[in-house]
Length: 434
Length: 164
Image (cartoon, rainbow over all chains, first blue to last red; front, side, top):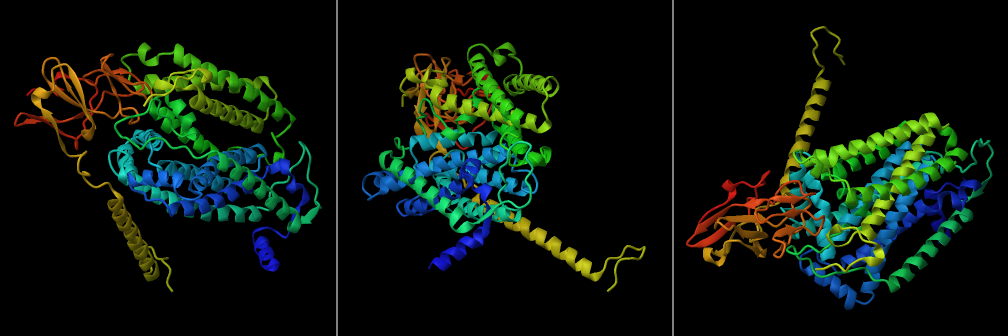
C-alpha cells in the first residue's frame, strides 16, 4: 500500500527538492491550499448534487430541505460555501505571492498565464454557483452581475440573452449556470490545474527564495520529497480541514427568501468578491467600470511577464530593499487616495450635472477616468525621475497601489454601502428593507 | 513527389488534398458551432412574460396613476391627460426592478439610486437612458401590453404615449 501511495506521490513530485524551497514563509502553502480546496469543493459539490434540482422553485425548496431535514445537509452546504469563499481568497493571495517574488518571469511565464486562466475559472465557478440556491440574494446578485454583460459594445445584448437563456434571469438561466458549474468549469479546472502542476516541474521546480542581491550558487542542499515535503503538505491540509470543518459546524451558509423577480432588495449587492467592481460602478459609467477597466487590468496581469522580465530578483520578496519601502509607500498612498476620491465623488463631484448636454459614457466615464490617469501619470513621472527607482520597482509600486485600491473599494462596497447604496458608517447602518 | 517549383504556380496533389481537408474541417467547425449556438439560444416566450398581457379595463386606471402589473414585469402609467405608457420595470442601468414611490411621485432604483419620472424619463444617473417601453393597445375596452417587444428611447416624447 505504501508503495502505491509513494509511487503516486513521486509521479507528481520530484524525488528530491531543494531544502530552501520548503520554507513556509516563502509560499505560505497557498498553491497547495488552492488545490486542496478544489478537491474539497468537488467532493462536497457532488454530495450537494444528490439533493438538488436546478429548477425554479424546486431548487429553493431543496436548499431548505438540506438545511432542515437532510442529515448533515446544512454542514455539507456550509462546508462548500465557506471553502468556495476561502478558495477565492487563497488564489488571489497565491497570485500576489507569485507576483511579489517575481516567480512569473521566464521560464515560468506560461505557467503564469495558466494561473490567470485558472483564476478566471475560479471566479466563474463562484459566480455560477452563487445563483443555485435561487433566493433573493442569488437572484439579484446575478441579475446585476449579468446586467454588466449587456454593456459590451455591439454583441452585449446577444451575449446577455445567450447567457441568461432569455431576457431576464429565469429557469433557463438556472439550468445554464448549473450545467456550467458542475461540468464545464470543474472539468476545465481539473485539466488546467494538472497542466499547472506539470509545468512547475518542467520549469525546474519552485523558484528559490533568496535575499536581495544574493546569487544562488550551484549545489543547493536537496532533501527527499518523502518525507520532508509530503509531511508538510499533509499537515497543512489537516490544519485547514480542521479550520473549515470547525467553521462550517457553527456558521451555516446564508439563505434569504425565495427569489422574487418583482422585488429588488434595497440594497441589492453583488457577492462580496464583486463588491469592488460594484463600487466602481457607482463612480463610473458601466462601459468604463465594468468593461474597460477590468479588461485593461486583466490584459495587464496576463502580459506581466513580457513587460517585467528582470531575472535577477526572482525569489526575492518585493524585489529589493528599496522595493519594500516603495510597497509601503504605495499602500499608504492608496489608503489615502481611494477613500478621498470615493468621498469626493459622493459629496462633491457631479459630472453629469456640470456637463448636462454630454452623453453619460463621456461625462461619467471617459472624463473622470482621463483625469485619474493624468494624476497617475504625474505620480509615475515623480517615481521615475525624482526617486531612484528601477523599472521593476515601479511595476511593483503600481501593482500594489492598484491592488490596495481595489481592496478598499471592496471593503467600502461590503461595509459602507446601505439602502439606496448611500454611504453609511458601518456601525450606523440602517436595516435594509424588502 | 513533385514540389511546386515551376513558374506556373501549380500545386501538388498532396497539398491540394491537404488544403481541401482543412477547408472542409473549417466548414465542419462552423456548422457544429452554428448548431450549438442554435441549440442553446433562448427560445421564444415562456408563456406569460414575453407575450401579450391584459392589464385590465381602461377605466381601472385613473389619470395620473401608476399601477404595477407584476405578471408582465411592467408599470402601467396613465398620464394626467389620459394617455398610457407601459414602462418595463427593469432599471436601464443593471436590471434591478425599480419600485414606484407614490409619495415622491417617482421611480427610485434600490440598487444604485437611478431615478425616473412617471413617464419613465431619467431624473438621476447612473442609468444611461429612460425606462424602456412596451407597446400598448386597446381591445374591447381592455388595455393590453405586448411584453415581447421592449423598445428603448433617448428621451420621453409625447409621440410615445398611447390614447384610448
